[in-house]
Length: 389
Ligand SMILES: NC(=O)c1ccc[n+]([C@@H]2O[C@H](COP(=O)([O-])OP(=O)(O)OC[C@H]3O[C@@H](n4cnc5c(N)ncnc54)[C@H](O)[C@@H]3O)[C@@H](O)[C@H]2O)c1
Image (cartoon, rainbow, N blue to C red):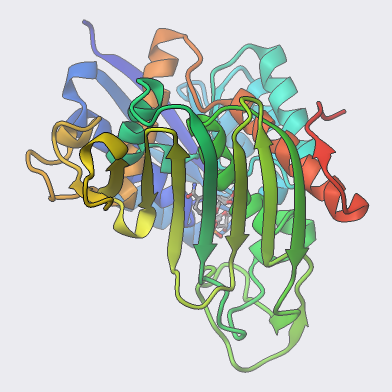
């Protein structure tokens, strides 16, 4: 197979922009057999110092403060959008109109309508799309999917999913863009529920109806300084301003295949730090997993368990893609490795010209769930999933 070079342009060189840069660089090392070489062509950040620092750090050929230069660059095949959510609609629709393949970070739009507009624009342009639903990729999660699909767990009966994080649990955590409706759009519903709903639908199937609730527990926070810090930054001095989106969202869900479920997300919880997880129950067994212990899962198979206890399984080279990172069980992957797997699948999709998952079709399904949860806040009753206008 001839080596395929794919030109990469990244917009937004904050946390995700740097993680994505590292992920593209990891592909020839972690997945040498695929013969794909992503080339870091140009990176953009409105903060010149960040753009320049990223250029030097990751070896981009160029950098800019004008994101439109990424789209017009002739050597860029793929535009990777890692800016705050309020910029995604304009940047993603312009990128697909320029004929570029696009990876956009979740939740893609600020609200379900923006996500739908972006998805429809990309479909019309006929480009390959991808979404940063990286929690699909731990070997334990992929093994769970296999055990569901091959019938090991039997007929699924119920599912519990959650994403509980403490990044804003300190009341002095600054009012970053994530906590402002005009910049982020949805709060926990966008930031965290997007991952939790995608995980649930990947493992169990489409959701057909929901009823949800929400709360903003910390209503006022210190104002952030633009271009400084991240969403873990705290400040005890200075002016404060209101939080304008929700800290907490939970929902009862029904899946198309009859499975009952609950989803819960919170960004101000005390205790869990970055706990996305699930507990899945079927007629023959159960599995539970969470990201804070990413490299293991707990399996209960009724036929094998006279003591009626869960078995702890360490992930190892026998599990999907683990061997690309380490030859032994218990020598685990980290968050950035999930981004390398994500970049690998996306690059393969681009190289083959075949849309893979998760693309914008999957984030549109998530947006339809978010839209129904929002409607249920107002109606206080079950809402059916339906297409977004
Ligand atoms: N998949 C995941 O696990 C995950 C994790 C964190 C964030 N995200 C998503 O990634 C995106 C970015 O989040 P982040 O944590 O990296 O944010 P961040 O604040 O760390 O970085 C955003 C960067 O965009 C830059 N920027 C702002 N306006 C710009 C413009 N007009 N042109 C170019 N650059 C501009 C900022 O200067 C900053 O460097 C969000 O959509 C977020 O929801 C996904």
